[in-house]
Length: 266
Image (cartoon, rainbow, N blue to C red; front, side):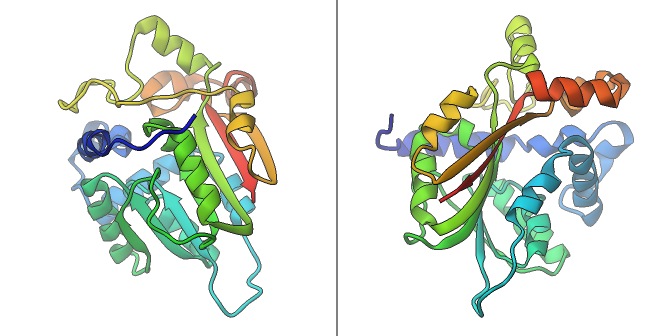
């Protein structure tokens, strides 16, 4: 069900995520002293995302393309955060665009692209009211973002609107039936801001979780949709993650994983 976005809520969400730089979960011990916004800072985050978000290469493979026209294809990341995924997607020969509600994320993303001497259009934007024309993008990517907006269906409808016919996209949304969801419910732990570092709120304003059937319903406008399950748990589980045998981790991720990977075409 869709309804008109509430601008006041989105201002609160913007303030929350400006304070909650969640990629800093990877900074512990001596690494906590790395200067925010430095090349070392971004390198450390990307290295750890490659370790924990091991399935990212499947997104890049799906979004890869063969250039068939003089016009460079365009890719939009919704909720680009500090740009650590977008900088890697920029290697796929797209003209990259990134939007985010949080001012601090936008500032860091621009700095990352400057450090790597790469171009991208990075600006403040709301997933539920995309400031782009109809059928503008060849590809859309969003990971761990849409489940934090007020009305996710509005965002998915907007993605459909701005994608070109034949365009493709990837998204990650939280799974409802997962080990991580169960543990958080039993321990009554917030999904975001688990240490309480963000004083604005104990948890994100919205944290939706979905079943596979929910996803197929929400993406029913699209020509094709495929949903896979991955990511049993990540850096927040500390030593438990490192001590879990990789074969067991990958197997259980397919059964009770926390992330639903969505591959779709218009």
